[in-house]
Image 1 (tube, rainbow, N blue to C red):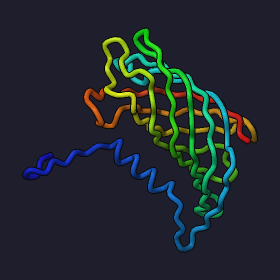
Image 2: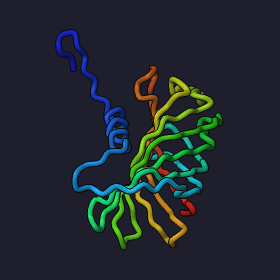
Image 3: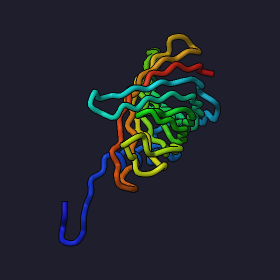
Image 4: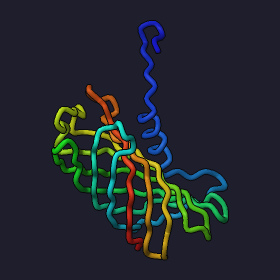
Length: 189
């Protein structure tokens, strides 16, 4: 949209990044109980495959490590846990291979007595190559945003699914971005 000489560009990815950052920053409000849980949460592996049949054929595998930050008890049953998530792995597409690494905030919403949790996050991402055959992702600096569902199979093992989008958030053109379905298995400390 244009308003005179001011150009307003709605970018969902940027709004999600700001919202997550705002939620992860430590804050205390009246009536809200906050606990510090600075410790490792989980370590594991993930594999990703294209979310759309007509999208770019990227595949991804990575190892991850999650570190707990603050925990907010929203009620006697509901909890919001903030984390820093880091991952390193392989990204491939069009016969080309690249290193991929991420570090960024995540939030997990869970309810006591239910082994399911919803997680969302956004991470600055580095890829060692941004050209995959004829596909040009624009720059090595990318952003990865995800939302997922996790199931604690046992007290120490967790499996999950997440829908993930990666793009350069308009830093440089071209900015095709792509979406992946990600499956994970992790050990919870």
